[in-house]
Length: 288
Image (cartoon, rainbow, N blue to C red):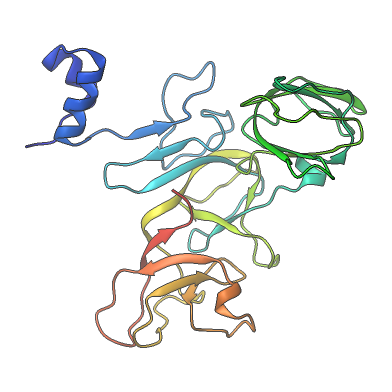
């Protein structure tokens, strides 16, 4: 059977929604698949090769191409001119979230909101798509939730955070709260900060700080071996890791003084013409 464009299925076969999906899956999917999607006021998906100052999609929106590669939507907070190295998550609790505070009021089991002091202040939905952790201390049922929305708050005031499913343990004033920003709200390219993890490989250069772009996180990709184009690899080596600057390198190489078991998995090499030859085309495996 040939592939079908799902956008035309309803016109082609005029079937009920469940049959529509079944028919589409039977023939293969030609369209891109978008999980997350446009924010209010936007009508067209931002191109993979464009950057823009106005946010187009929900942060972290997942875009799956027909070939299986995955791209995610985020904000780059520092301009960069290097697409050969991975771009890193840069957000922290202290700078982008709310670092361990006591809740502002008791929340009952079954509630889906929580009142949290916000020392730095926040705008409406600044934490949407992020995460919240409730430390219940003696109770082993610590509660971790995704954030659906939050209200705006002036510095030092409280914000109301709504989560994706209700609390199963009462939240007491003695408990602790950590609010993690959406991990795609603050991406940066940096050689100098070794402890940061790579989010993915950039599609394009970013000329202006705080612009929004797509970052590839899975699929066939090109990376910079050791930071030097065409560098040779160890015979038989297939698994790749990221070095401290975001370059790819064989997992067995510890030239940075770090055991490969401790380095971030990057994927595996695809193209090698012979043992000992250089590589660059690899199967990126950051996140699906």
